[in-house]
Length: 170
Image: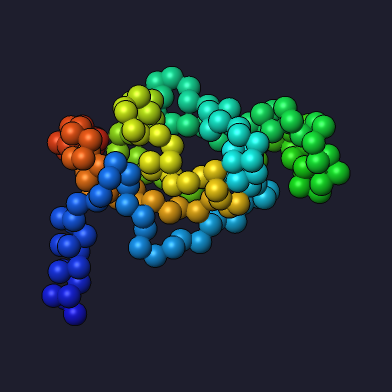
């Protein structure tokens, strides 16, 4: 059993991912239960809302933020106001209460990642790491964000791949 697991680990560790995107996860992960239902397919796909409209990237560009209720209310003061979920959103906004969205993708604290630098590279966009978000009713983690997947992408894009480029020296 140990030899089988070590062989499997080695094949995953040294495999090359095809194309400039992170590899798909071999086993589908369940979408986290969110406090309110939200369809990226409806908002980003059908309505064409760009990612940055709801997910701003404040300087220095390390992280994309989750939307403030004021962003949602930009449309939902007039759209679907009779929905119980929009009523809950409206109440949270009126009380200056954040919606506690559950993260779908999270990297460890000791890893440096900057969305702005990655977005500036040719061929690297939101879908490269997050999958076809515009096609999803619910978000689940469907792209691998392991160290090996990131290193494979760096190799393919001919980006730096030494340890201290992404990791905090301890």
